[in-house]
Amino acid sequence: MANHKSALKRIRSNEKKRLRNRFQHKTARNAIRKLRATTTKKEANKLFPVVVSLIDKLVKKNIIHANKGANLKSKLSKHVASL
Image (cartoon, rainbow, N blue to C red):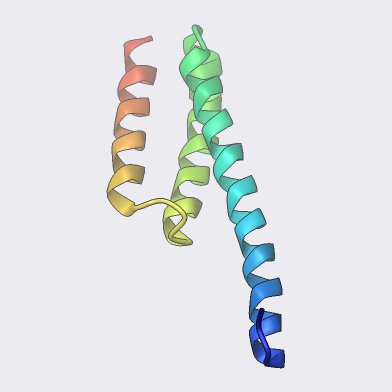
């Protein structure tokens, strides 16, 4: 157990950040699943910028690696183009 006030505060703030990161990551994954499940071009074109924005935010905050974000965006754009 931590003995210093700063260590206790660090534990609390780390837990808050962990939960926020998990929520954002899970939200983005669900949005990606929803985009992959779409069958109409119109709906996919509407969802694509939103999903790309979510991915970019995760990359910017180091929740996912930059290359993973690029791979996801590339695969999703191919999927949208193929509809």
